[in-house]
Length: 295
Image 1 (cartoon, rainbow, N blue to C red):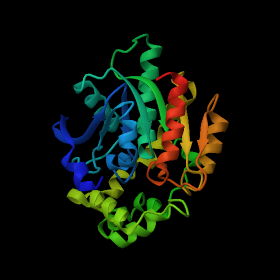
Image 2: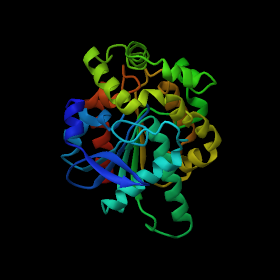
Image 3: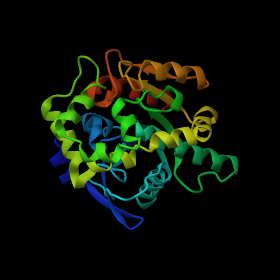
Image 4: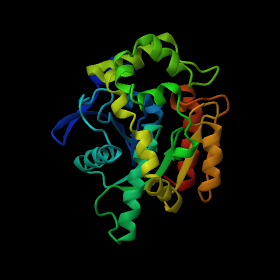
């Protein structure tokens, strides 16, 4: 599905005085799909149809991404992205949900897990929905010490970040974005054009230095987010592209070291975007996980 078709078939919901884009489809148990940085819910388009055969799919564009609002002077925070997902689920009447997350979305999922654990600890049951049924993570910064940011990310987070955002271009984006894919699964120029269309919609390429503060947040809230991942009884799996220079094989090793009963599936030859690079591999690992749950 092309970006234009994705947008035309999407929906809007209101939250915190803004109108947000989301996609919904399929039938079955609800599955919340949380996208990564710097892209959008379109990241899921290659696995959308097959997932929808077994799940009711819900996938918003977060604040600052895709076809959702991109305020220039806003201070973005993971907590508000988690609020956004909870608000959408509440508006759709979804109190219990499975989660599939990637990259930036992994951290949002960790915050949702932390809230889930707090409710459990206080004996609130499903109060303050959603109740998290399971979580599958794709490549992302689950542990700040295992995150290896690209040079452009480091520069965006520094004092010259605003200038770098201002000077961003299709050529530079294509080069940097392709570098995090596997050696044989690089995006085509047409695909890069689609990603660039999403990134630049409503000036989104000008706020990269605002969104990138998630790296600082991961360090600040490490105990909360890593602790939730370690303590939770919620079933979870990591599906990882080991060729990813940012969060590849080294992330999987750290996950196995720190997470009790670590469940990890590696997709050989795959980089940072498994759902784009190897949709069949992601679907097989995801469905096998859910078959084990009886979902």
